[in-house]
Image 1 (cartoon, each protein chain N blue to C red):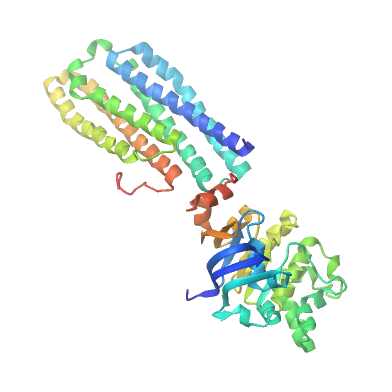
Image 2 (cartoon, rainbow over the protein chains, first blue to last red; image 1 turned 120 degrees about the vertical axis):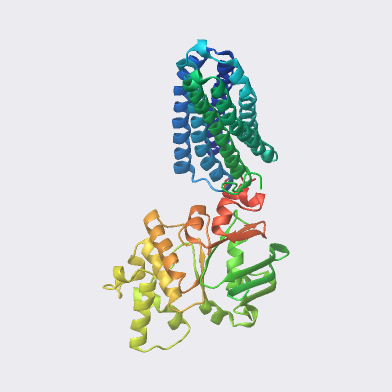
Length: 222
Length: 252
């Protein structure tokens, strides 16, 4: 294997490891939230530093590759995409840590299962996990034939997000003493919706890398 | 193509029985810089040597198909006249060693027996050296031999010698491959300036140079024109896998 190919492989592997860590952070965020697991939430917060370190490493690997190997065509697109995907993954990691802080901050005794179920949050977490893992497969296999299906999942995320306002409002009308918690719940759902946006951004970057096709600002499933 | 200055139509070139260029069709627009890229032996140099009819000077070499210079078939033009219209600069600077800088610039005229007045000579020397971005460096030593100049200056002198004949097309065959990065940068800057007046067709192995300098890039492989497009497209999204493999260094 040529030196430039080895460096490219290292760059890819760094992104893979970061992706796996962020996926695991999101999976843990789901478990911690669904099971009110404060210990798991604390673990997520601790591991956030590793996600940040990966972002710096990916950044520096991309910079070095451009400086040393003057990539063109698919190699150039990979480096440009990898740098952006690194940023998006770091933000997803931040948002997962935000979910974890939501769990550690609140008083466990006031947790309301009725609201949690009403908001369809398990479905929301699962959709996001599918989006993030499916686009990881796309990136690793350099195969983007399913990108429209992944982008379409953002519709599910958006639908849950939209409904969550009405459901939270109804819940708070019936339980006005829960207003402080209700407002935090809205913030939590907003964080999860942002994760959906970042997953879509990652899909767009992967399509740019593999097919040289720009999807950004063009309507998600065109 | 309306603005086409050079047009190759179903063009083939041979060394004896060996076909080295296969059915090339290409339109070169006026005042653009084109780069021909491709691995060694793909026919790049042969292609530009065909364009000013140097290929046929090799024993056993012949061609078929047509090349038009502004709609005139070049094979109907006297080769000596053609080479005034289509100038060529080679890999290694080759100023005439016994001639002064000024005489080198005027060599095309003197070797063709074209008489010039003193004023005309002075004007051609100054204009050509200015166009080749060499005037400021040599204006006080025009009577010195060209071989006293540095490699980069000698190459610009050769470009000045070619420009002195007011060609329509300039062919550069790896014209910077024997030069250091500073001289290379000067020639690249010069190419950028010259495209306002000339159509330039260059062969290079330096892909970054092709990317920096040319408007259009053509990729040749085993004598076939695989693809050509805007340089930006070739270096960001080549259509053909062979082109991608070559420019990303994964060839073979």
